[in-house]
Image (cartoon, rainbow, N blue to C red; front, side, top):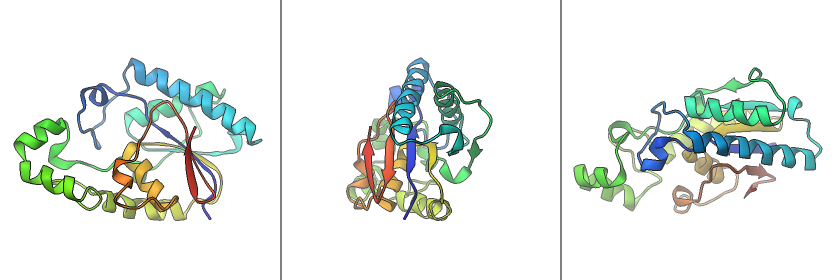
Length: 197
């Protein structure tokens, strides 16, 4: 059984606001994203307190991309923790959209209509040109998940959250790629289920 994981998606970036596929491009938070990261930190503080968990005693892990790093630091600040003490793990990076990164979905549809249609038909298994699928991401995450033995705070990406919803919560592969993923909230994985708080 996986120990409790307190998951924060990074805050908003300008590319999120513009509807651009970020993947593994290193895009910084915008002003709203920084507010969302702090808000998530405040929610996390209440959740941990309600469960009698000492934030300083938890394992803190994040994707190494700039938007997740800054989200992590801002959330930790809300809990009175220093920037130091975080493990950055490349396995927690978002899946890459390959040559589609930086484009909006309408641009992808115009430039690669066959690829866009194939992705719509099977979002879990479709691999963009030069990119990864949700299935690929899940296989990348599986060893990381198997190594979790203590409660952790994890700051990562929307695709990673969806993959964990499947791996931990059993969300089916048809539903997982379209599951709602929020910024500024905390996704709690515990006892084989997940809940947004």
